[in-house]
Image (cartoon, rainbow, N blue to C red; front, top):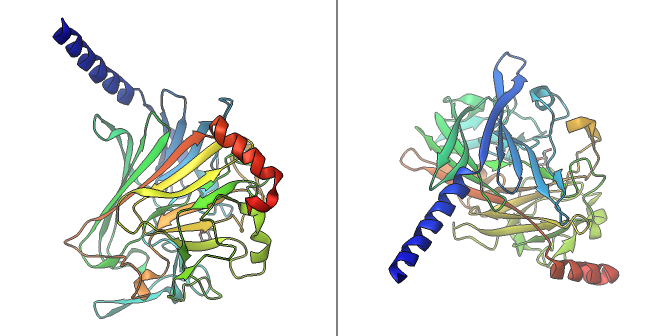
Length: 394
Ligand code: GLA
């Protein structure tokens, strides 16, 4: 009898795990056509809990993320556009895109590798930004394949092969990113890349978050904690000086949960125009660990970012300019933030930084996870108390 029940339990567990994985649904629809006539698809993933994520083949982009607040009310918490034409327009500031081949800046668009000098497009005077001008990874149309796998979960794998010399980078680079949605409201991004010639690679996702819902006026009341005691100071053009310094006593100290708006004004007149800094994560093990926690006290929504990357760029939407996004909503200055897990900017030119060079015999791999939840009643109580005493909130 006992054995009978044990087998029943085992069967029940097996059945549940099979069901829960199969229960993330995938729908494919058209997202429009690019100016050059390429068809772009949109994949909508939905889990049992109702969380919905939309992914477009242009730029392997996250276009929508619908998650519940503390009362179970859903909102789309990421910035973007209703169709591909918005993403091709001037108002797109890398919303939800995959950014590369090398995200962030390369000083003066120059580097030397294996004795050869390379020159890249200057698209952020005087530097190269986010992989270039016309064929950076955010602008090309990727191939997509649905994934329904017991082990890896349910989602979509995007792949793109960038020919040797594209945007000035050496080597033919084959990139793939598998996005999966879990039953516990996580978006998991597994990146991988291979090259046939040594080349720098630094990939990230450029999603903008406002946990009150995309189009909410500001993100300055959100609270942020970064698992980073240090950062990489930059020059006037946001290129790291090569030093690694402590955040202690500076506006960049997010080692404890702190309101984003608490000290941002002090950065208004700096080159970064707000937060636009690479934080050196305490986790340098190459294993996936907690990197950032973002919390909106009003909606109770919480985002945690986990990654195996050594750095994270915290960008406070300083260039958002009130452009119209999804459903005609306006994206005001500092109404969303990006938490871009990555290697440090300009690593290709700075010896002391972890290397971004991929060699033909190696495989580039990265895992980053966006995990959504809501503040538990106890945490909420704590938040309210600390809000009464703003000094403690800094
Ligand atoms: C990154 C950069 C910013 C800006 C945004 C896109 O976060 O560091 O300076 O270029 O991307 O607008």
